Length: 281
Image (tube, rainbow, N blue to C red; front, side, top):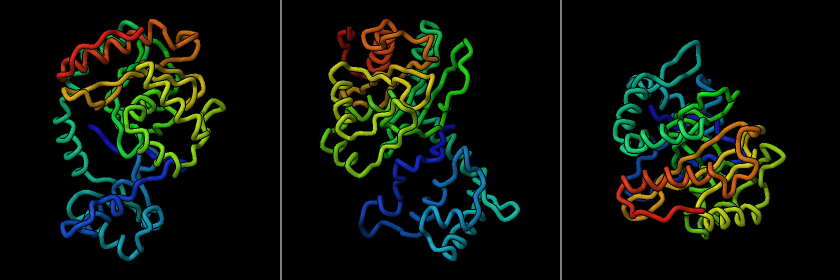
């Protein structure tokens, strides 16, 4: 199941659904607020109180209570010991959405082959509201220790290889405008926290055709990521190989691992209708 629910970083501003909904007579404010309450739940915070939900969303407690009561009646949340958690209806709808993700089905054999070739963990992810959503994860056959990635996880885009690739293929003015509103949290001593350096890194990523993460989100973990394109040459997703620092190539740029990731991404792209590319050296 694909879940859009991992505790958001305080450095990445969570997008308010109510504010993000297109303006117009078809927008229903109550529905937008109810959906916003659902998005507060995460893998790290599976149960939340009314006060916490109201505080995170800015919705008045009385309004939040009425909305949660409606969601509870429809099976979208469950109330236990005064706290709320997601209900079975969310699980059902999540699986319906996952069944429509043809990208996962197309990518899986290529991800499996890439995992076997590199013997490291591989990922498939998309960009959603300037954050990375993990659609697939195939773990390394070797020990990897703790790694924050998991199917359904949402992680910051600015400090991950997958995120850099996806952001690098968005219009730079849009990315620059977004970056100007952010305070980039230093997850590790290697995290790029300067907006100027961040934009330079995206230009370099775009120029070489793939991105790298040099322990910028997790100490001890490095990765290489490459974009997946559809039949219109639009970047719709990205894949990566991640592993412990000591097992990854000393220099990621130009490495055999980087070439393998790019080749696998291009194979997936071809199956999605994109034209064959010349491999990146």
